[in-house]
Amino acid sequence: MFGLFSRKKEKVKKTAIKLLSVQERRIYIIDFDRTITILHTGGLAYGTELNPDAIRQNVKKGFTDFVRKVISRGHAVYIASYSDDKNTDVVDAEALSGHDLIKYYMDVVFGSGQTIFTIPGRDERGEILSGGNIIANNTQDCKQYHLARILDREGLDQENRDDMKRIYLLEDDEDVVRFFMEKGCTTIVPFSASRSADTAATKTLFTSYMPESFCA
Image (cartoon, rainbow, N blue to C red):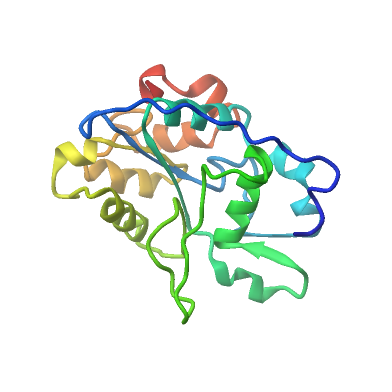
């Protein structure tokens, strides 16, 4: 797509995965814009914005290492974003948004054959089926939609505080962080939604501001 992988093909690294008990296994939910990326994409990209070099520069250093580390320790990782598949309808250029945009970013930084992050399938009507660990939908409910889909896939109960402690959130929106905190989820800075959100938005999140306990 876009002929952008012709110059340099990323090699896909295989990650050995540790086996954990159900109780030990964490579920990481990572926001996309300004948490994984440095600059906000607005949920839409086209033209030079889809150049692999531009994408690599816009993904925070240490992100891929962080993901490989937590996966190797047996944990699950999801990307949850407000980015909407329908955003491409607003431009007259070849563009990506929603699931396709995030998947394209992941293919660039992890390698074009990567299977770490996948998108859900669709039925004959185009409706999203369960599956995939990229969740992109423009809901305005503090990501309750995203959380519900993840909990359903993982078999967790959001009324069970022990289950919710296993959710580890990286998110730059203070209201969203507060929503997850009220559910009992684990955040970067305990008891502070604002500081957790500010920390997630920092350019050096994955290299300087990530506590060791958060990815143990």
